[in-house]
Length: 262
Image (cartoon, rainbow, N blue to C red; front, top):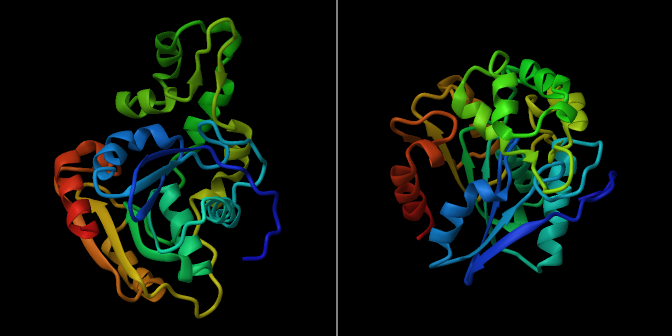
């Protein structure tokens, strides 16, 4: 892969031993959102849960393209001397995983993409990002207070609490966003866009798309495009779940994941 952007040295959490599994979270997320899954998988695998750039404890850089995200992950695989990797990615992390698998298919043994496809989808984040940017953290002392101020712009309580996990509440310091909010806001059009792809490229390894029954991120209309990129893919639907099937129906999701991996 040709490096055209500064590489972020990604923070990661590691569990277990065995064949490697690398987990990439979605937008506004971090490795800790996947700790429950990682701990369970650690009984049989070496699991590396990653903070992607501009998220969690990883570095902040202006470029949020999927090429940049995938280069970061490639550098981490190189650093840890990992090959034949099972790559699991949710949402934004799923698009980064797809991008890497198309660019370096020889390094990826299996690909598991959670509730996202390779094509574009509607930008539902502008209001959220504006509200977060407009929140004057100098006047906020508690997460509950920030939640109250964001309630009008982000009425869904679960989504609001998920986003507020990104508030840095370190003792003795003023509140700050752990994520690189300016970079994400500037690059959101690219993040909801299609992944980059060289003409004719495809990933022929084992590929699984796991979608939530109540989500439209992997609608049937996208399946033809998925087949162009990943001709041998299998589609699995988790019942009673939306865009976060690993959190909304964890029992069925993990049972499905184990059946794929073991």
